Length: 335
Image (cartoon, rainbow, N blue to C red; front, side, top):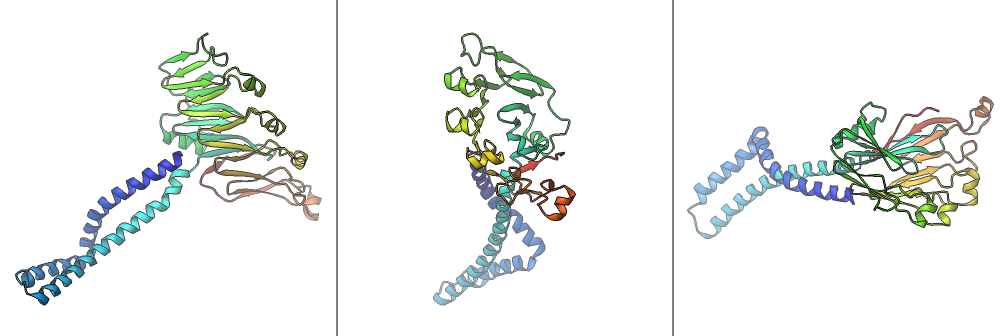
C-alpha cells in the first residue's frame, strides 16, 4: 500500500510539475536552439494580422485562419512532444525510486538460508531473524538507506534500550515511559514510549503463550507486527511463533512435506513482500539440496557433481553469485 501511494503521489506531482515546467523551459530552449521555428510562427502571426486582420470576406479569411492554425498547431505539437518525452523518462525511473533496496539479506555460512534480514521502514531499519532482534532509528531516511547499503558501516545510533525481546538504537532520548502494573502481563515493566515512538506488546493469552510470543513487539510507532500463532500446520511446519508480517510486508515459510523435511527446508522463509526465496530441491542438485537457490533475481550457484569436481572434493561448494535485483541487498558473506 505504501508503494502504491508513493507511485500515485509521484505521478501526480510529475504530471503537474512537468506540464508547468516544460511549457516554460521548452519554449525557452526552442527560442535558443531552434530560432527558425519560433520566428516562423511569429512571422506567420504578424502576416496574419497585416494581411488578414481587416479582411472579413469569405474564402480569404478562411484561408488565413487555416494558415494561422497550421503554424500554431506545429508549435504546440513540438512542445507537447518534448513534454511527453520528459514525462516518459521520469515514469521509467519510478520503479527504481519506489522499490529500491527494501530488504537486505545476510547469508548464513552454510548457505542454507538467510541468517538474518534487514527491513527498512522510513527512517528505521529492523534486523530480523524469526522475530525483530534490533531496531535502528536514524535521523533521516537517507541515513537509513546508507546503512541498508552497507551494514558494516560504523554509523549506528549510540543510545540503546531493551524493548521487550528487541534492542533499539537511537541518536537521542528526550523522554521514556513504561507500562505500569495495571497493564497486561505481556507489557508490565516494558518501555511504552521513547520520544514520539510508542511500543505495544503481545498480551499474555494462551495462544501467545503456546506460540512463545507473549511480550514480543506487536507495534512500533504506526507499524503493526503479527506472528504465526495458529496450531497444527504452523507447528509442524516449524514456523509457529515466527513473524507473519511487518507493516504491509508478509512473511511466508515452507510448509511441512516429507521430502521437504528430508532435504531440510521445512520452516524456511520462502517469500517476504514481493521477493521470492527459492532453494535447490531436486535429485539433480546433489551436494547442495536444501541450499539457497535464489533471492529475487539474485542466483546462488554451486559446483555440480561431475568427475572433476568430485575428484577435487568441491561438489556442492559455493561457486558464485549472479544477477541483480534493485529491491534487495545481499551483504558480503564468508563461508
